[in-house]
View 1 (tube, rainbow, N blue to C red):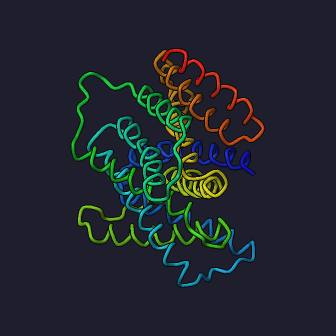
View 2 (view 1 turned 90 degrees about the vertical axis):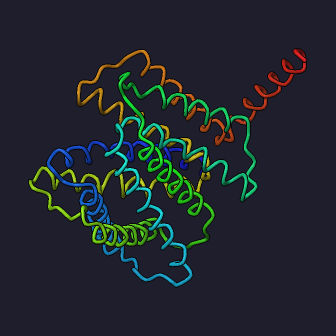
View 3 (view 1 turned 180 degrees about the vertical axis):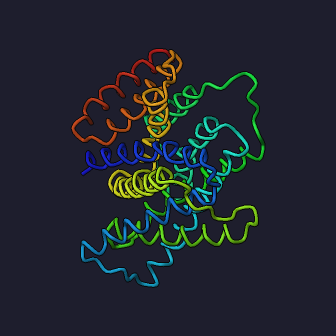
Length: 310
């Protein structure tokens, strides 16, 4: 069960990491932030609706479930709006790096409000993941940080962290597809209200078949697939572990840049990738019961050395 959870967590992170592959081409064709988000989530809702119909699942939910689904949809909308809007104030590489503070937020929330024990391996994994993610960004010396951009990304990270925690703590009894459909539907409604209330955020139709393709890509891969896999992972291995595995998101974005856009693979990037993979490996080790004996042995060795040094 936990092995599947780790697998789903990795898939969720990799799928979400393809976000720039769909968003940046749409920006290049003149589609604004609000329009990109609306078309991303409208295509996601349409795809999920088809899955519900073909799977003969009901769309109905109880008021009790809706009281949890509604905040999830609003939180995801806030996270998306603030993150995408931050690209207008800072480089996307800096934004994606700062965004990865959300595993720390998840760990703090779970510890402070739900008494989850934070182990040494969890702290080590978070530290390695944060360091590795920072190394993935190679900005020029003339790059400046925008206070507005930083605030937007931090709000995005906090919203996403709270989203993951609520998914982990909720007692909703429904399929992952149904849960994701209603969350995305509420998210879409929130985005439409936002776009209509912002004079400078008028909706722009995708101007070409290529733009429609990338809108569908955003709806399928970094939205439907990512959220379905993430929800499964959270229920199987917990919120903190799933959040840490999200370090594979910026790693995926860097891999896309190297393989598809001819970006150079430097020693700094290789080091960052290695640290992130090591962080994810720590989580995999922590969730694999068959390796419990290895972890215990390593822990006892560390303790003995610590006593010897003391």
